[in-house]
Length: 118
Image (cartoon, rainbow, N blue to C red):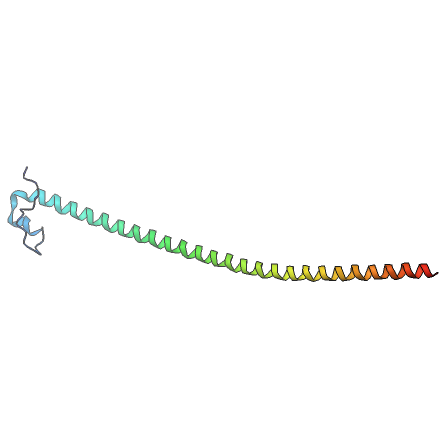
């Protein structure tokens, strides 16, 4: 079998189909070649579509993840702010507690002194 090889009489820009009329001995091989070429082009288009679909899916997932990350960042900032507020409140309560203890100690001392005078 001669097979399809680089010695085909194709000139630049000439379609393979034109060989069908000029070279009848290879007609079935050429038809097979044309059919296979069409199949490969279809397969190629299918793969391109699939690649685009996967790329679109990836972009959508990436965008969704970025959105989620932003939500968590915002939540982290809010929690940090809340924590600072609570720390201030706790610090303030601690100061208040110390003041109350001091006042109580003074009252106890005055009470003790007052009782001693009776």
